[in-house]
Amino acid sequence: MTLTLSRTPRLRPPTPATAPFASTMTAFTLTAVLVSGQLYVVIPLLHDMATGWGTSPGGLTWLVTAFGIGYGIGFLVFGPLSDRYGRRRLLTIGLPLAALTTALVALSPSPEVAMGLRAVQGIAVAMFPPAGMAYLGERLEPRRRVVAIAAVTGAFLASAVVLQVAAQLLVDVIGWRGLFGLSAAGFVLAALGVRAVMLPDLPRAEADPERAPRRALGSLLSAYRPLPGLLVHRVLTLRYLATIMLMAGFVAVYTGLQIYGVSSPSELLALRAAGLPSIVLMPLLMPWLARIRRTTRAIVFMGAAALTLAVIGFTGTAVLVLLLALYVAAITGGLPSMNESISAEAGQARGTALALFSAALAVGGSAGPQVAAAFGGFTPLMYGLATGMALSALFVLVSTWTGRKAVQE
Image (cartoon, rainbow, N blue to C red; front, top):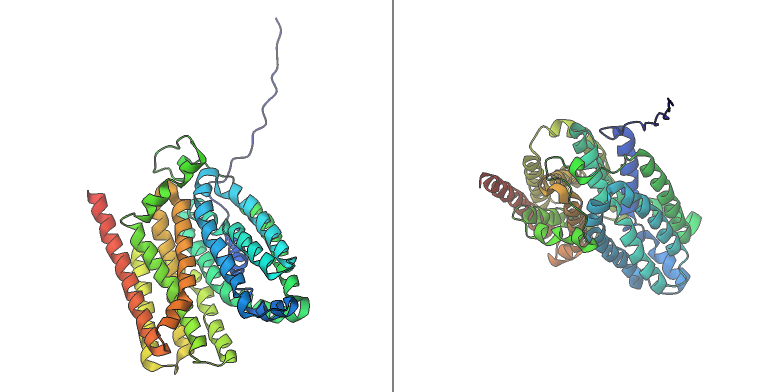
């Protein structure tokens, strides 16, 4: 009789049920500032870039537009792919690509080449927002998700100020090419940090256990089948429209301050910075605010934004710093509430739905300057935006009623 001893298999340590909160929020928040800030970082560099290439700064504004176009397209491309292939897999590819494309912009020999590379850069960095926000909604402990989502959303907003100020301070030291090189190095560090804190991807059925089991992958095009349905969804469509209005209002307010001569350049920088404390403090309040229904939160914040803008229109610039801080706080609270409400409604198509949310932010941000210019004055703009915020709150309220009716049916 022969006794055969089999080798004891080596067991892998079990994957934690939830992601570590502090390290995940830190890595994702810093990455969000770097990602979203690439849209704005060119603005203080236009004069130096124009001087180096012997052209006019006005013609180089297309460097901003080219990035924005690529950014918006990237959301729609990579959101569905994150649903199909996993959040971690997509980000471990996307952030190194963002580093490479950003470094190539630094090497651009001409404005035409730089514009093309900026579009490619926009596509590459667009992998982060939908996949990252979907990951936070799936893998963090439920009671802490709202804090992390608020922090990352606030980082997207804060990047408009942080990256422009940084570029303005550093361009005379390392030049515009050095700034893009520094951003590329930042993406390398972001890739390492995000990879270190992210848990392995779960099958879709485990990521969303309330839904049906995961089906066969099918063709690549099948990943995009949810897009049309989400665009005409009876609940989500209204929330996307509200998101566009929120972001358009945020950008339009600061554009209006600049184009209507309400403040001097130094005062304008101070007004922009006045919103940063609100962006930092709002996530700290989210553990208490999370006790309120997400749609109710969104409606209250939008109503507060509408009221604040109406007061600005009525009082002028007397207490503008304080009122802008309140307005930014309302936007910083409203956007993560919208993110949560869209994510909760999307089920297995969460990545695709949040890609559309990110695209709505891009559309709103792009429309903001045109909205500001259309009103012809700062006071009419404030009243117009107040009306838009009130309509956003109404859209969310109607979507809530519609969602309840659909459940009853």
